[in-house]
Picture (tube, helix red, strand yellow):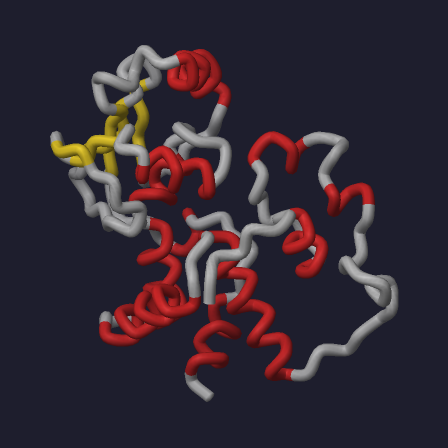
Length: 208
């Protein structure tokens, strides 16, 4: 299945909450969830009761939409989470959070995960001294993520440098606003992952 390229605000309206897929727009009055708090489509305002399977499927689709991952890759992440010791749901979220594109977003170098993915693909990010253009690359404690020297003086990153101080960075990450260099301090725990996902439903979906 190809990547969804339609209006992402429809995804937020479908799930009935903000998934923060459009950066600053999600915090302003133009947010579609604020203006039309009901599902899209002709019958969007009708009340629908979800089955148990429907709730599990919707939660899985919501997680995929938040992190911008296709089904095949998402399932691979789940299978890896199953192999790890501990709780599968929390392992899955930890894997998703430590993807390079998500870390670039969490550090404040991008306004959305989609934008972070594009920044990585265009070769603007350096991981441990090496330019990396793979959004799914995984980070670990001690890794250093920075903007490539050739990109730091661009208009975009000049704007980022001026605004990054106003963005909050999770406790498991650290950012130097002057050099646009981040460091992974630790692996994120569940209480440090502020996504509105019921990972237990995702596990139930794949465990059918």
